[in-house]
Amino acid sequence: MEYNTQRTRLKINDYGRNVYKLISYTKTIEDRDKRNLMAAAIVDIMAHNSEDSKNAVEDKRKYWVHLMILADWELDVDIPYDITREDTVEFKPNTLKYNQGKVHYRHYGAVMENMIKKVAEYPEGEERDELVSLMAHAMKRDYLLWNSDTVEDEVIVNQLENISESRLHLPADFQFKDFREYLKGTPDERRNNGTRKKKKKKKK
Image 1 (tube, helix red, strand yellow):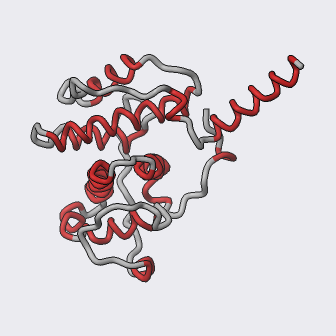
Image 2 (image 1 turned 180 degrees about the vertical axis):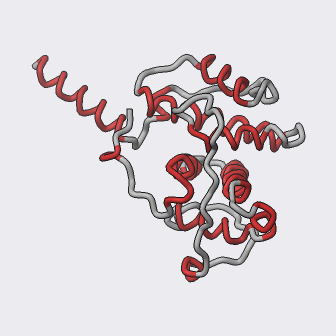
Image 3 (image 1 turned 120 degrees about the horizontal axis):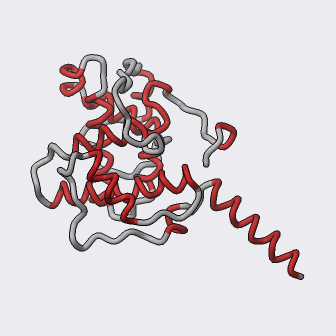
């Protein structure tokens, strides 16, 4: 389970911590095309949740700037606009409308659920399958950060289908990673490693 003392301070509060988690996860994606897909999906969610969604769609450049600010300009993706670090002072984020309805699973949060519902509207094809796969990995990572124990893959599959109202399914060749892969670099991994080291010392 995560505690506030372990969390990174938010640079732009309006987007919430789950957007930060998604961006952090996107940084770990090795395949550039998959990183591009995930980054574009995050921008879509940022724009979709804007107070003025009509203007947000027309002004996505702003949200790409905000994405890079939140990523400390360390996200290596293809940006469809010409932006630089100087753009950081040009825009101020709109206050986002937080989901007042039911959130199925608190450990994923409204942002992840909104992304799942948004991707469910995409036409069937390779792009949608890639996004579903990336979201499934992100969901398992979030679940493990919340629960800090192992989780049956079937649980993630069922929760993905439940949130998407059975519109999204994992590709036939999809495979989850070992739970330790999802915790690499997180406070949980460092804490667990420390516990294992202490146990080894006691045995001596």
